[in-house]
Image (cartoon, rainbow, N blue to C red):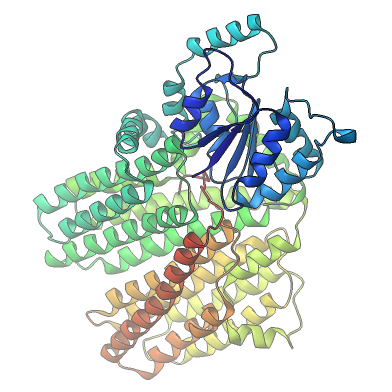
Length: 598
């Protein structure tokens, strides 16, 4: 249980002790600042501790935001400061610095605020939450106290809490058709002790049932699938809102939320393809194309953001124009909608599933996602070309990790003469393998030759740090090359089961690539090198699939793709689950990603 130390007796009529207890704190009242220092020493080092001014006046939610958010080792609001285990040493140093010269008594008034100031001076990162209309203050006299209490009564902190539970930046559909009521579902869940992870799991199960309904191939099944997909999205919004409402953030929760979003969407694609097959329509190529396009869109987002995460002199006329457009209200919603974020995308899929056929649904999805990908990528290319920025070694390493080069590329990169622009190497290699895989007849060795060339270009790309203005395009180009090669060769095989097997293989590899992204975002680094070696790296898998297509019949190729998909899935899932569960149990810093709508 966390401990809150009041640095004196609360003033008459104060609810500070009850408020702290309602937040789960064990409250201890110090007789003075010296006693507060002693009480701080007594609190076990593995527990959160807060130092609170007994004259504090403010909203309960202000205290919640300042003292219970698990994402920050140190946090403060006026009149209160807190430290998690990782920040206890820094807080201890700040308290030691309060020792009065000659052994005199430490001044008790304003101790919590002085500790926060000392932490800042010590270089510690102290989080100060944005309180908005919430009150948090330490009045200097009775009149100021009375005015502060009136200010508290004038603002409904529960309404503020509900409003802040909604993501600040979201899509049009989510903002106007989901969040107005999902926030109340989040509060209902919080009051019944449900956790965000439980809601996330419920969302996944609902989406899987929706996929199962779509797989029936009946009109009733398609209607039920559309309705359930929307309900799954409502729960998907609810889990994040519950996390913000109750400040239940965790590394495991962020991973589950992001991973399950991808699992839900791609499982639904598979369900639609199975349902279409029951009606005699083979849309597996469209389903796999949609998954590839959506995955590449995400990798563009991840790579661009990582490349510019901590770039210096990060300015661009294009970015300035974008910021100017953001000041015009209607353009904000238009620009958010045309990128087809998850809310708009799932709504479109759900409606089209219920009213049309899987083929029409996939055509609309492919057209919409292709336009969105073109729009966002073109804008980012323009920003990159006009931006004056110095990219860091950290950004270059993140891009190299996202590239997923395996042992072949890594070994050859040590003897390769690096090209000046790595993105050109990636583009040439991608074009070579995709053209031959698409145009050569099944069983041809031309894709194998192109696969060898692709490995060589991958090595050239890996031989130089990815610090160029467009080097963030390297990971999405490699994703397009690997996934597109699997799709093209499976289509050429011309046998039943080849495309579903290819879908399974791309899904398994895509999971590995998403897992890499979420580890980097959680500051945990890339997956271990042995894992990348074990599954061959992107260039090794691409070459292997080309060789299998040249050596095997269509039926044998299908079996080989299935076996490869199972092997990759088992290895990456086992390592991923082990890592994230261990991180959660090991007390890894909590993460809650508020990034772009996916």
